[in-house]
Image (cartoon, rainbow, N blue to C red):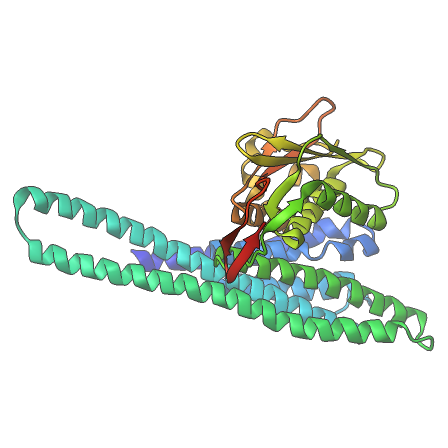
Amino acid sequence: MTRPRTDRVLLIGIAIAVVCPPVLTVILAQLPTSEARAYVFLYLGIVASLGLMTGLVPALVAAAMSSVLGDYFFLPPVDSLSLANPSDILYLVIFFVTASALGGVAALRRRSIIEARGLSRSLGSANAELERLYHEQAASARTAVRLAQTQQQISALRDADRVRRELLQNVSHELRTPLSSILTGASVLLGRRDITGPVHDGLTGIVAQSRRLDRLVGDMLDLARIEGHALELRLEPTDVGAAVQSAAERLRQLHPTRTVRVDTEPGSLEAVADWDRLGQVLDNLLANADRYAPPASPIEIQVAPGARGTIVTRVIDHGPGVPEDMRERIFDRFVRDEQSGGEGTGLGLAIVRGIIEAHAGRIWSDDPEAGGGAVLAFTLPAAPAVQTHTEPVAGGTATVA
């Protein structure tokens, strides 16, 4: 019964892999060519979704379809499978390798989920059998054997999950080395004065997309560390107000026209936190707010002492806000608010939640204030006034004074 179901899911997945990339291509074809190329990485969402829901083969089919369609419709010369710029070949190879790797990781996670569901059903049956045997005082030997088999399955599932995390880390590391070489080489060539206009434009595209892929690989690596409980933190008393000011200044440098208002309440705003990871959290939240807020509206950041020895930080934009049914799901991986024109990989807020929870904090989507918009808030444990002790963290210890 399992085999026909698996075959049916595979066939459905292949059918979707054949249909969805052309549908997305039709949508992107309505945009100007320059804008359409900026959105071709939406194909990665199709590949990852197919790998997670139907397996590796449909994901590879979708990756191949996406590469061919991207070449035919968006890379010059348009409406032809030939390439005018040799650098576009490298662009397609990077896209196909990344899509295949992403589909493979998603497919491996789907297999782990299926095994976990089967194991859950097996454990439920084992528990029912144990209860029956407890009342009937019979077949104890058979129950012992079944328990041993269940333990073996649990061990095998843990090994599979460990392999999945290691694969994700290895893939991320292996992708970073060639990406760094591509980015460095393209940047050096871009600085030469003897290159022609079309070559300059092609190199500019390679640099931009390589940086985008590097950010994606970095997000994948951070997510793998979080899920593997291997996130290293250097915990020390950290001024959250100063960290917020630094993050606001970084956003102003990237987008000088964006107004960022920082409101810090009186009192100690020191938390037990890792300065770099806190900066990563704030950068992600501010980038998310900058993406959704109207250009002329300000982004507000509020920092205040909270209840039960915490420091509360709120990031408020004046965009469309978060729908009620997505308040909890926006912090899951690969979840984006499509109604508000969501962009990105869908990993940013999942990484933010992982970092905050690793600090023993909490993050949530708060009720919008007057004027609408999204309100994302998180807490961190406040630093004690005078105290010195050693905090255990993943990969070592950190001294907190």
